[in-house]
Image (cartoon, rainbow, N blue to C red; front, side, top):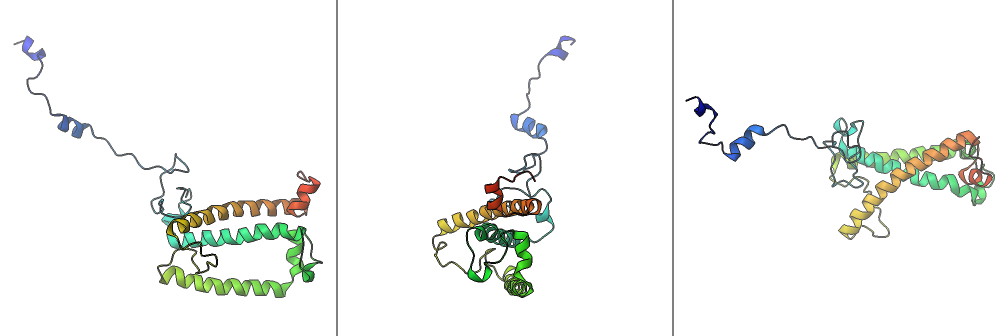
Length: 200
């Protein structure tokens, strides 16, 4: 009887029951962009330019379609702004020939009438955009403007949609850098590079 206590059991537990008992908590999906943070719940890889990046959790509190629209708009504006920061140093239209090539000074050279036109245009564009975001099923950023017909092929449309978002993000960073250096050097980006005025 004493040795029977140390004998192996005649009936072993089934593998399935053992696995069920040893099953622990499931791993939380992590962000591709920031591996130590949870994956954002409301964004996925089907979205153009998806990178799993939302460290502040905006997608948990704001409408995701509105956020996509805002990113695309800001990217488009900054792509134009980055070009506008450099272009006057190469050439200007006759009516703007006396404007400064320093972007900050040019802001004041334009005058109130031109800025009024810009803000009116922005207001009209925003009114159409608001209608599209909340009352239609259109894709974010789709204004029906495609003169080169790049979106006729679904594969190319997906490629260019992602490319626009990525280039827009790069332009937002690039424009911010050029503006920052214009504040420090009082020069346009090309003039600053030519004069090697990197450390004001």
